[in-house]
Length: 213
Image 1 (cartoon, rainbow, N blue to C red):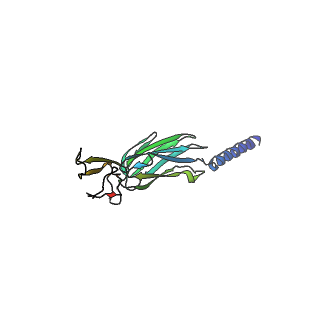
Image 2: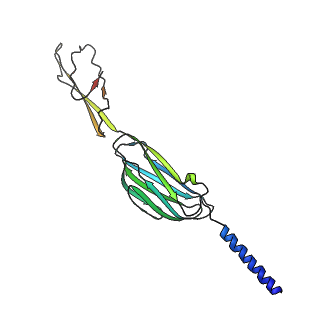
Image 3: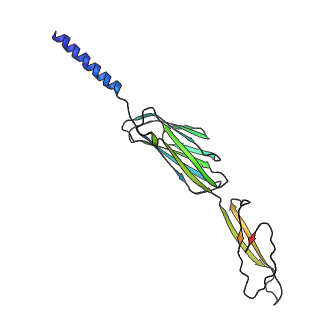
């Protein structure tokens, strides 16, 4: 009888352990944080996204995957990851794999930004096999300001030097865009010139599009 009770107790204990194991589910907190550089950036320049995927635990995460679709108008250049493998261009998918509690993987994506000014948004999202205690930080959006970059210069020459007193002569002002970006039809070029004291103004001749005051 005692042996039967002992075996029954062991079976009951084993059943309780198995039920406890079945009832327990691993819980993780995967956090996605990204940054961009440079920001703002000149139109047509190279932009780098650095995306960190961190497991804040308390348990280990398995099957972690990061997905990033680059902004419309950008062109994929390259990517790297500190863990796992990545594929794709317009949409990058990185199979990071397992992240133990406290571990971080970093994915770097380089793109060429559009040749127009504006704001572009990049979204990175991570998934995993286990339940996540805070799903709101599984995705991150980064906004980048794209600007038109033009290096303007101007030269000024005169048509006669020296000049006879009372004789007319010309000043030639030449604005130049040294790039790297072209000016659009809505850009306004303003040239201000103060004529020497004692000179009498006669006429202004415009070539191409200039606004003179």
